[in-house]
Image (cartoon, rainbow, N blue to C red; front, side):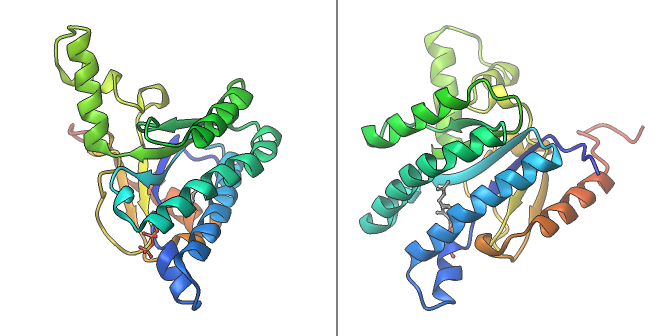
Length: 228
Ligand code: FPP
């Protein structure tokens, strides 16, 4: 079935609990989370989804123990290196949102290599949210508007958000049982359909995603208007 949903955002929560349930440390869960990123990218690509935006590292995640932060940084470099052949094979374009400036030059270099190598791909666009927070994104958008002396209004802000090139977000999924957005795509979520599941991210499956996409098709999206 071809779904009308074009753009999915995912808050990938539950790696730590998934690992703890197996008597392992949190890093083990993040490794499993990275494997799931690869799988879901392929699944979304096969389903004809245009954009998949994944919350991989938030502006708040710096508050985690230094060891966990440094593990996540190394994991991201490893993921990007391993992923490139698969992105190429599946015609996937790689992009990011968020402020990359605090990352190491090694990570920023790998991000750029991956973007450059996939820029011409016309299949799914995988967008990693890295050092991303919606508050930070909105402030940066307003700063850019002020610098360019562009009058402030909703359309202008929207055009200057990190997600501007990727269109509106149709659905936002959060795994791991919590029912909040945790500073993810707050502006863009105004009319997104929200899905919350207790499933921990490493256990999330193609079947569960397809169930959500079928549910999405049934939802009546009025965008503040009346039924047609
Ligand atoms: C939340 O799980 C997840 C994160 C903080 C980051 C998401 C990271 C990944 C999916 C792996 C790396 C991604 C890439 C693209 C290489 P949590 O640690 O908060 O889980 P918990 O709520 O069970 O503690």
